Amino acid sequence: MIEKNTPSRIIFNIFNYGFMALFAVACIAPIWHVLMASVSNPRLLMGTSGILWKPLGDITWKGYEIVFQNKSILVGYANTLFYVAWHAVMGTLCTLIAGYLVSRKSFKLATPLMLFILFTMMFNGGLIPGYMVIRSLGMLNTRWVMLIPGLMNAFYITMMKSAFEQLSSSYEESAKLDGAGPLTILFRILVPLVKANIAVIVMFTIVMQWNSWYPASIYLPAERELWPLQLIMREILIQNDSSKVLMGSDAMAKADFTNNLVKYCVTVVGTLPILCVYPFAQKYFVTGATLGGVKG
Amino acid sequence: MSAKQKTKSKEHRTWKQDFLMNKWLYILVVPIFLYFFIFSYLPMFGLVMAFEDFKPTLGFLRSTWVGLKNFTDFFTGPNFLTILRNTLVISLLGLVIGFPLTVVYALLLNEIHARFFKKTVQTIHYLPYFVSMVVIAGLIIEFCATNGLFTDFMVNVFHIKRENLLQNPKYFWGLNLITDIWQGLGYGAIFFVSSITSVSQELHEAAAIDGAGRLKRAWHITIPGIMPAIVTMLVLKCGMILQVGSDKILLLYNASIYETADVIATHVQRMGIEKMQYGYSAAVGLFNSVVGTILLLGSNYVSKKMTDNSIV
Image 1 (cartoon, chains in turn blue, green):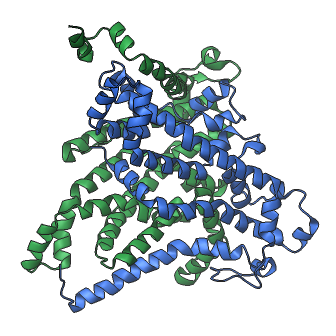
Image 2: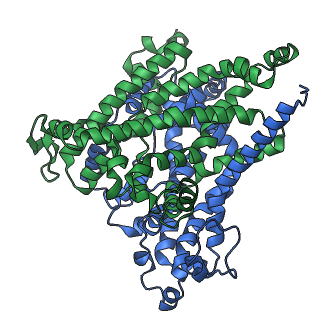
Image 3: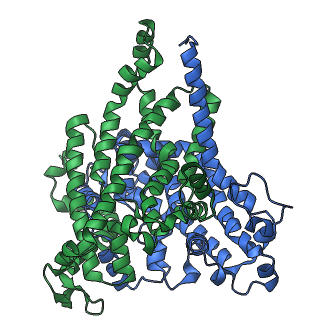
């Protein structure tokens, strides 16, 4: 459509483009600030306030050296990677199977199972009874508490169910005639057809798990060895206590304030992987957000 | 005859026939059922602790029954009105200010026609949503410190007293709202951005020929076109009014601002996990779940009536 460029239109455009650009700056600036602070001269950093657009003083990698030599941080990183990978693989697999089960038209338990699962979306026991159940299962302060609860949820299963229901049943019937069992049908025939939906679930799971800190803070209070990175970051950034993490780091680092860099470096290390991934995974998140809004 | 029997619909099969036909499915149901039973239904039964002076050593069955004591403690306690007010105010601010901004943002984004620019800014606007809450809260704490960037800005522009903004209860609602908008604007608008693109282009063209300007067309075509989407979202958000995102508040608040920052979820977490008043916290949680479920079902019903969309 061809638009006339009336003066009011031009003024509107200037403001609109200006606002969009400004908001983009506001979204990036804090992250950029952290990135620049992480390589700044720690002594100069102490005395300044405001957003850093470029590193203060000469670029230094000392903060990163501390971070990458620190055992707690590395263990936290490894834990996060393990939890993310586990949920991306096992969580998705369970969701897939559950979604398949509840979408079977020729299966008497499909509808009862769906109602059983859907009810958990409407009502839940809440934090404390959930905590007590996990506690009486003996899962507190063990790795299992990060792996088993949270593996599936009603929402993703509903998503998977409607993906299966949109497929024509002819794929399945012809496979059945060829003698394929239900698992062969699921993994060989149906999974390739719903891989876009699976990708949405995997992407969401990865980001949510990577950023998750709350369950670990409740269920792993005494097991620092099992903490995901976010919980270590919470201690350094929110509780402003890097002493436990940096225990035993050399006196030199303390004397020249390098320890102050650690909070920026650990933020960068914990955030950059997700920020590198999300622009490419964007289309999946758009789908997910749209599905999340409405189920027809 | 046997072929006919195989194609019998599931209503006409006996359980035994169904089992023989779907053996594998019956096996797979077991772990799925157990998962939801253990982690979703057992806690529901566990809610019995809300009526007990619950002691973990005695368990659900042997703890002393106290009837409604935990509930009366909550409703008559000093915190009830404060946390209910905080929960509602924080939710309503998001609903009344944050939500319309998301719609306006989507409309403005729709007016950007340079494709590369649009794609780029949109991607950047999503960014804060993907940064972890721990990092976001860390940034907020740094910028709101006594000599932080945001404090500087507020002191210079609004001439407020220089102090740590997160220590003063009167700033918390504002700070929470602004940072919520900053973090969620781009991502929250996705739904509206995609429904705007499905509004008929022909209507726009016809209106343009009739001489309707951009503003007129936005008002008379785009907004009515996405109204069902707006109503659906609004109604569903009303249904979740008690479910204030507590993880951000848990990271940001401190004893000096409980007065404005403490919400139902944070109260449950503090009383239950930290102070170990299990029965009391379970009662507060049960109150929250019941009201939440009523609101959710109600809003879902309204949404279905008004727009044919629903979530459950």
